[in-house]
Length: 443
Ligand SMILES: Nc1ncnc2c1ncn2[C@@H]1O[C@H](COP(=O)(O)OP(=O)(O)OP(=O)(O)O)[C@@H](O)[C@H]1O
Image (tube, rainbow, N blue to C red):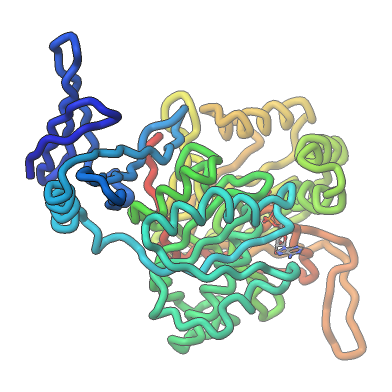
């Protein structure tokens, strides 16, 4: 399609090719300015007609590059003869890859996330974009920490193109747990059984940052900007990611999609949860406090080979922590790089070392520095599943014969502190069960 329009009163020749919208603006000084938008970046196209006017307009909404890795919602208004506007609008209807874009969502908001602004972020920044793009959505606001499964109670998954979770990483993990649970139930898989294979969710999940850490969107988009995350959702591209299932005492404790850390990282998270009143400052103060009172824990760790078959490897000793990134931080070049959907977990076991060396190592991880795990007290293994036993921990047995641990140990499950109350627990990787809206372009 080709035609002559005006843009802010200036004459402009417009061409729509199979891949781009191109506008050549006539400059008063004679030279032409070319404006080009990839059709992949177009969010929506609308027509506007003014009464008693011979001119109509076509508004092209598109994703433009913002600061750093963020995206902005830009608009191009082209005015012209009504028939030409109609033709331009129709040309988009045939050329835009509309069919690949999601159209119906369930939005699950945690009103308690971060500084309690997740609701406002969604309604002010995200909802107007979804409406402009003709996306229909229902909103569910969680009423408490255990309310997330109720969001999906009467929901028919076949009617959804996606679920958006608005909140932090802990909220993402709760949403994924509820979605995976419900989906497995519908296909007859027993989630209580750590050996059961999980089926992939039938639609992608979008994460709109509204919490404190927001590492999932940051790792994926290179930005914690809610609008950037929403634009990626509308554009419809997606990235497969993994989840890790944690079972103890014959019960599924939950899935995590970001981090799973036993020992020091569990203790840090437990202290952060108890000091929520400090705001984001707790994430600096409490980890520091806990590293000064770090404790060695006697463990036996059994690791399944990376391939999923063959003999398990057993490691016994005293460790400060056993942890794995579900979104792995891989050592590539100068910096660690987040990797989604890896074929195995990279597990790090930190054993006895001088405090100064430990702080240096953890600071390198925090700064994403290359070599962050190249310390002689950090052992790194690749595995698809591991079991941790606490052979020397004191236990008590209840009147019903239930054994539980006397001392309190914690597992950091995506920023939530899970109490380990049994002397054994199981951590298993499930690859590609969840797909996230957005692609990694910033690596
Ligand atoms: N209505 C609610 N009231 C209180 N807590 C809630 C509510 N809804 C969800 N939660 C719980 O709040 C916890 C933390 O939420 P979330 O992860 O969204 O925020 P955050 O901790 O501030 O952010 P981040 O995890 O990114 O650091 C989750 O365990 C979630 O289950």
